[in-house]
Length: 87
Image (cartoon, rainbow, N blue to C red; front, side):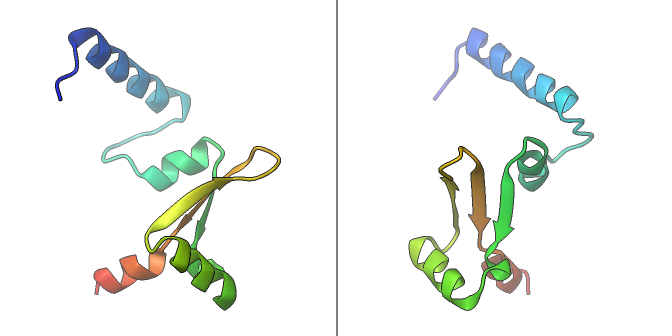
């Protein structure tokens, strides 16, 4: 897929604005850092109790996000798989 020049320039400007607005200093950009800086809650599976962890893994082995009733976004991610893959 090829973006037209106008769309490409718009995306570049939005990314540059994000760097300034959220005080992102370097690359590669950490998705965890960005999520936290924009106010999302990020929770690793390892922080969940055993029952909740099993439920989360049955929902998605990698991770997922959900919006609470009060409009807060929470990202759950499987850090256990990452740790096993890094060994």
